[in-house]
Length: 227
Image (cartoon, rainbow, N blue to C red):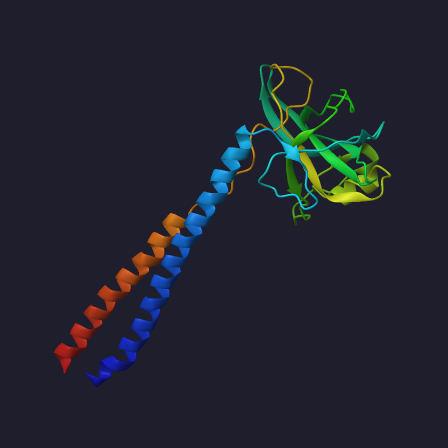
């Protein structure tokens, strides 16, 4: 029996850890479900005025004056159209707010062959806030001369437009889809929803705890039979 004390204590500590991690994931599940419920409520509600510290999970609107003659294209995204796959990117235009800060607005996907700016932007754009993205190892280099960027960094894009005091985040515009084949930007349709895999994670940790119990019983029985 003494030979089982050390492995028994180790197994018990690991069992408690696995159970604690499973319970923690269940708490995370409830927390994430609350966030998703708030997102679904915001999805159908009218946008609210953007607060000083915006959240990425709420629908907001901003007011200001569009900076004339400034636009950029972000990304290299292929969309299916009635005429087949078409390459394009996200049309980005700057809006100067009442406080003087410039906020970049992603108006939606446009064909790369379409000149920008190509439309009169909305007077009061609405959507959700997206944080800046750091350049990845495989990201193509930006081309400020052509106004084409492959890293969603508002400060860098704004600097390429010759703008200062640019907000460190971007507004992803939401709105109705234009008719198929239209050259108008295709805005986002839904608020971003974070993944919710915490139930599967909880089952995994509880499963580890169960396997540990059976493994300990098997090892203990084997050692007892030998003694």
